[in-house]
Image (cartoon, rainbow, N blue to C red; front, side, top):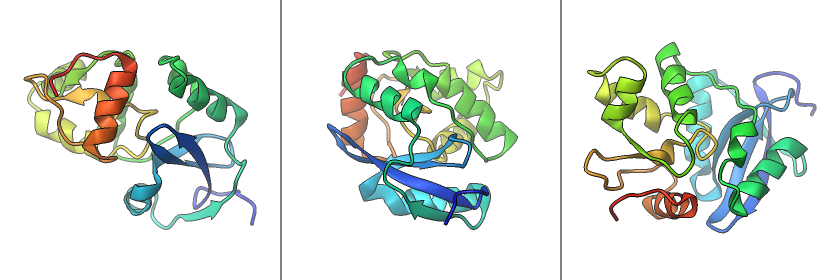
Length: 177
């Protein structure tokens, strides 16, 4: 089956120090979803929510060289490398606005939900920002792990709090464990 429509996505894997990453890409090479192999059902659910019926074709080697190289460099310590990954998401206009703001958080930095809400010009939308953050289908690349509580503590993470802790430590970000 050729990957030719939005309902057909290629699903490739990438081994990391914190587990096997799943990367779903479209025919143009844009990353549509990233998650962890132990959270595959969550990724499939988010894809259905954003795009409707989606067929994921397991296709080893389907990930673009650009994406694979950026992931390799990121996990090797070049924490800015993910900025080059081409991403295209569904979601509402508000969700995409939040996800764009997530990509603007520099590697090694964190923001609270309130800071993120202020960054998009909607200071009262803290809960809505939290919900959009949780609906992010492209974790790590669209760095929802960089959002922490207002008191500097770790809050939930779709890939597990242990992974969030590892990612923030890897990036050298300040937070309260």
